Image 1 (cartoon, protein in one colour):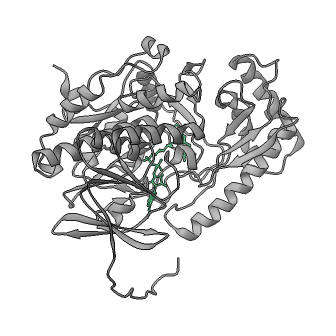
Image 2: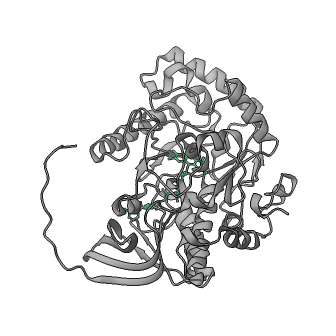
Image 3: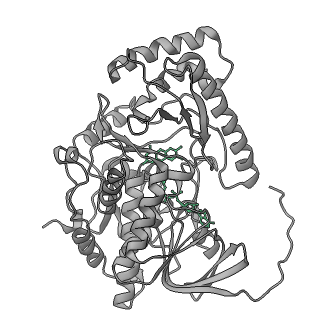
Length: 479
Ligand SMILES: Cc1cc2nc3c(=O)[nH]c(=O)nc-3n(C[C@H](O)[C@H](O)[C@H](O)COP(=O)(O)OP(=O)(O)OC[C@H]3O[C@@H](n4cnc5c(N)ncnc54)[C@H](O)[C@@H]3O)c2cc1C
């Protein structure tokens, strides 16, 4: 960035576009869940979103994969979301393969409709193509969010504001402290340009995952022999993992496959120039990846690059400081909290920002392997109430991946179902704090926990989940 130079923006009157009890900024898994939950508890809610659809990274970054280790992170609104996708035939059944993972994939077009329906039914007002550009704070209270729209700058006033922008944009403008990176660099993880291939056909000789594993080895060796000139594909046998991507094909009968092969390294996602470069590099990597699939992978003879994600996939950016936090030790040691509002049971899933091929999940160290084993047995860590409440701005909440967490903790709780859980909790907190006439910091967290236990008492979405360790009640709510 050009350092040291600045201009002064002239002061001007800004029209007020709308007023609401609760303003949710960002329409991804965290924001949509927050808006639905707040509205169901009687608040007048506006959700604003810079893109023209809901779904956030699921749609714009083509994050179509549902992953869980043990299923106890599927809670509340996630079940409603998944069930509605199923009605639209837009989600693969959750399957447990020979790897220790439950996985599925969704159709991004259906995701837009499902959130449209859930928000409309809850009575949420929507504002698309509204880009948050500022936040006004008076005496420790955020009163107004400024947005850029086609009509120019507008103001939205609200009594509670939820930052669900993934990047902690509102909190940044409100002056709430935040962290980013891995402790050493501004980047925490590699970025990825997800892409989809169309016209693919699963070869008959690969009927199951075991056959795929074997085939992956052979393909990897073939690619290395050919000296394919793209390090993101070839570096140290990286391709071998990706020949297994069939599990990410969309609803079985569709001849499509998504790939997260791309890794754009050493990118600060908050630097506009670095982000621009990374978008271009990611797109080029996707082209090279698609070429490798076409040349080397049986079943791709007639395949084509269907699309690349509209936005580069960002795994981590701002982690906003709250009045409490999930520390890395909490995440590693499965800490339980009496004021838990959500839980995470995913891996410590750090995609190294400086390597095309280094593994994401630590299965090599003794500590990493022990954690994996405990996860498989049903373990999880709690997310405390205060991790969703901005430090120093009393009516501002966070939802989704920008909540208050350490680097390693974020790498786990960034998974979509957990973002939905923290969103649902932030929505309930916003609505209940208004009803009680206190700011979230002063609200009794036990009220929120108890309400969440009631709200999340829904039928599990899939038959298969009944065989898995169903989410136990929140730690603090157990007798
Ligand atoms: C490559 C990749 C692979 C992943 N794989 C998986 C996976 O397999 N399974 C899984 O569950 N998760 C996965 N994740 C993580 C998951 O997708 C995200 O962590 C999750 O979507 C975050 O949800 P969120 O609601 O916090 O933010 P987002 O989904 O990012 O939603 C934020 C919303 O805010 C909007 N917004 C941002 N800034 C502004 C602004 N200034 N004004 C207005 N609106 C704004 C955005 O447009 C967006 O709609 C992956 C992520 C990436 C990048």
